[in-house]
Image (cartoon, rainbow, N blue to C red; front, side, top):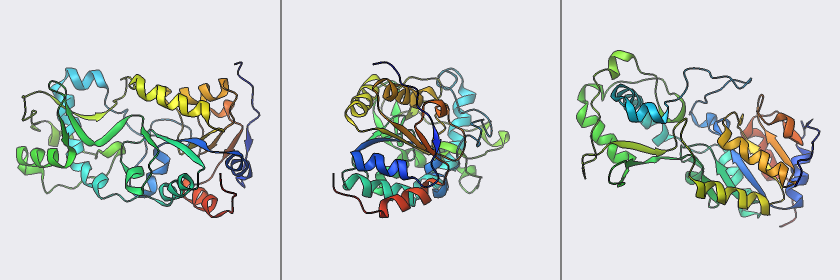
Length: 285
């Protein structure tokens, strides 16, 4: 199907999003902007630029011990923030819209597990989740909370340190703290441990992409929530929706990579907008 050229309108009232939901159930893509109210920082500013350093790359993590030390030191001090984080009003509103039959699937780019905590059932974690750690040799999966204990035992001097939260469950850690950080091996086989997430520069598993595109093809439209879509793994689904002739709308404070492909855009805080959206009377799907 040929891609149609939408005329993106700023939708301050959210009426177009509302009419889309009245028309039928949609697929929702969520990004870091939905979790900032839960205390988990995002990567990008309103223009879509990196606020700090780029996230760790897949190849660097595999090749360099120093990168693994840096990652796990930052993760060790950042994990408590993720573990304690509670879903925001936006997460809970999406659950209610799902239960009302207005959401077919949530495709989240986030790895923080907040959709699960909120109670979302129709969920696809595009980039995986921080709650599990996988051994790259034997493929055994370990709970992240258990790995936290191993990291603490291997690095007793860091246990009492506090650090500012960073995106994706990390923390801002001085170089001298992670230079000598000890990273435990898999207790089952001695292999390399890696969070069960898709790192920057890695590929999303094909079966996840297939599931996401199938849901979009069957839905009334696509709604982007709190994502700049600067990473292609999420942006591709907007392109796919346009090829399928589906309306695409976004709720985001700032620029998105897909602005030229949107039918409407709501420049509001995700929590505020979604919480208001769930309270509007709507006929059952």
